[in-house]
Length: 471
Image (cartoon, rainbow, N blue to C red; front, side, top):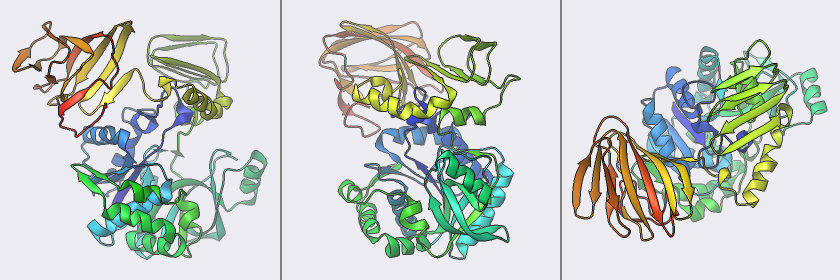
């Protein structure tokens, strides 16, 4: 079985923790590992050890590779989608690639940002789904509903479950509260978890029958894709011409052999602060918290601190999320309105929508500590064995001070070592490079000075990561 992980979401309903350049799947929201790491490890622990195939956008490619490497998983390929087109074009492209590379293997498609508490129940359901897919069925998982939830789509069955599985009748959009309760009262409705298992040939035949206008450009995008190490870049113009749609409506509900396996494994999609609160352990007053938090006379709340101490007194039903550059305070049952708030911030051009104060790069990360007219101070962390591009800046000078580890520094024609508490100066226009030759992180403080300090004042002369612009 070939695991396929979809990592294309932006997670706007979890702002300010989730940003477009560092969305929720790359955060450790429910444990010590991130959501994408949990997804990959869950599939491996279920006994399916084939390297996963991951689909993501260009901006997230190094985070995908780096986070999976942290947990000892090397993807067979990381497919880069040039634009967002929904799950149907993504899955069509993945099926074409699997067909080309693995013949007619079974594929299991899972979003990167879900939580599943009971891995044994998940394995049992997955084994059942793989068996059905091997017989030529398109299989989805129906989450046993715990409430009349209005934030999820639903799957309606044809008749009753037989031998523990059911035939899909219809995929239903997110309902209002009255309709959702009617679904539960009626029975035969399950939450749609957006997870699928099928043979590559079965899915491609279904696309050819029900969505040929989508299959054709996706096939071309795969056949004309460009390989770049780990990454496979789908051909942009072809993929852009594919209609945007979900796999549910484009193919699954139209196909004649679509089956559903019930999944009762503590599933959650962590799609909002309210759903994250539901997924976390609570104290005796029904509060969930992370970070340096003190809760006094507080009930039914979610409080997260990434910066310093957050203390509450006499509050109820709140979400408080404190990050180094943005603070959210909202009623917990209003957290679904964040999408509109983020849209407004985007219109205003606020940088807090895109990235955190800490910005991740393929070699490590940097964090803006202070800035003002003609200066900026950054904390730079370079991962073991990694190095920045060979580059120069036209508008700024840089001062580097090593505070932890050992740095290999190139300035002009000279390459030398800096130990802790040693420093160097790079004048404007000077070729330079920073590398970490050791097996521990390198941390430096960088002071920039000049008339322009933007990240686009980088002229790359040599780069291990084939980047042509800032990033």
